[in-house]
Structure formats: C-alpha cells, structure tokens
Length: 347
View 1 (cartoon, rainbow, N blue to C red):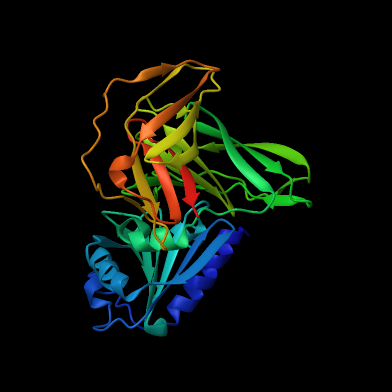
View 2: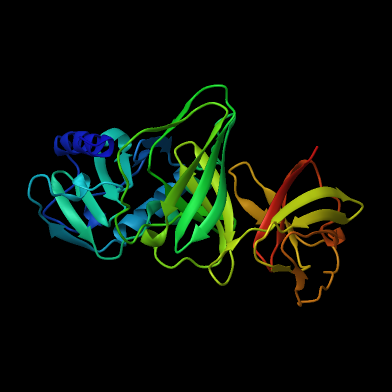
C-alpha cells in the first residue's frame, strides 16, 4: 500500500463519520458555517506532510475560493477513486474544529462526507492564499545536504544531491514545483499524474546522487523563477524566455554608498546575456518579497543587453541610490530584465 494512499484512506474514513457537508447539494456555499472561527490545514504530497492554521484574514479568501468552485458529483469503483492515484497533492481543511471538513486533490477532485466531486475549474488552494504560501513554504533545508539544479533537457530537470551531513540521507521520488509570482512562491498544479516509484533512496555521507524530475507534467512553463521541492530540500532555478535553463549565477558582493557591486558568472556551455536594470526587494516576516519604494529620481538604464560568453564572469557596479539608505534586514537584488536574483543581509 502506498504511503500517500494510506493517509488518504484514513482521511476518507474520518470524513465519512463527520457531519457538515451536504452531499446532495453541490454548492459549496451550503457547506460552510455562517461563522468561521478556525481553519486547520494539512498538506500531503508523497511522504511530505505539513500542517498550519489559517489566519483570520485568510478565512474570507478560503470562502471565496471554495464558493467559486464548479462541482459535479462523481462516483468511483472501489480502488479507483482519485485517492488511489499516486502523486496527487492533497489539501485537507477542517473548519471550527471539525464542524465542516473536506479535502481537495491536485487532480481537480473534492471529497466531503462520503461524496466525490469533479471540479470544473480547478485551482491550487495555495494560489489564492498567498500569505499561506509565503508563511508555510520557507525555503526548506537539511543541514549538510544541498540540492542543486544542474541541467534541463526536454522538460526533464536534473538535480544533484550533495550529502556532507555526517550521516546517510534518505529521499523518495516525489517532488513539487513552485513559481514566483508577485514576490510569492505558488505551487503549480500538475496537468497530468506525476509518475514516480514509491521507493526510498539513500545517498551516503560524503557522497553525491543525481536525480531527475520530469517537469512535462506541469505543461509549458513560462520564463521566470522556480523552486523545486523534494521533501525537506529545495533548489531554485530560472527559465529564460526560450524555456531553457539559465545557468548564469548572480552574487551580491557589496552594497554601500548607493552602489551594489555584483558578480555575474556564466559557467556555460551556452553564451548568455545580461541587462543592467535592477530592483531591490525586502523580505517581510511572512517570507514575501516586496519591491522597495523609490526615494529619489529613478536612474535610467539602457534596455540593451550585453553578452556574457560561456566561461566568463563580469563584475558590475549598479546604482541603487534611488532606494535611499537601507535599514538592517534581508534583501534581494533582482535583475528584472533577466529574472536572476541574489539575496543579501544588512546587519
């Protein structure tokens, strides 16, 4: 029995015993209590499980999202329900301590009090709960284990696991993909089932492992910044407008006297380009990145990009004086013509 399926079956058994959802009424508005005092959420994907409680501000967002779903009752034979499918991410919602409970599957199905519904306009719950995304999806890390993106070919992403933790590290085949939008990482819903084996792998201490993740199941990917999640590991990468992997690295060397000194390095094998335009962003306590307001006249930059040949690096002096004096905090310099970014901290 697959780990994910076991958890879902347990949830089905619990929900079947709960009151609250009216299976004969396909309007989710009829399910919700008039007053929502609390919403507990559990996210499950493969062996990854996370729990949190929505803030009061998110209650109305959740209500609006749920009421906007287009539902159609469905029935399945035993062993063939969406809960039996591998690779499905699931969001479980428990309102007012269990007064109303339901769960939503990434495949576009919803289950409430013994009844299945197909969702005509599926959307990932986190995409409409940005504060939840930023507060519950900080960049995961396992001390001593680093995951790095090394290649992208024909939609298959290759990552390398480097284990310097002092112990063996176990991982499975499950993964998820997030894209940054408006300073917030939002999970992308797979357009087809993610096919992975329910097998536990091990990379020994002081060893490396190469892992591939097929991203074709997410459909065509637009240019921008992405994050791959595998259990408690993550790796960020940038896709160009051509849909290729941007291998250029950006490092902030120093920020002082209104000038940011940065290093752009292109390991190759392809040549690349870079633009001089940049913005400064600051991270708030929830993890969201917000562009800093301008305090002076914007500094104009040329829109033409310069070449950065394979195997070369270049040091740039970028004028960030229009953002004024920076207070202590965690910042990000983003090359807004390229999607590249680098974080830095001012003590």
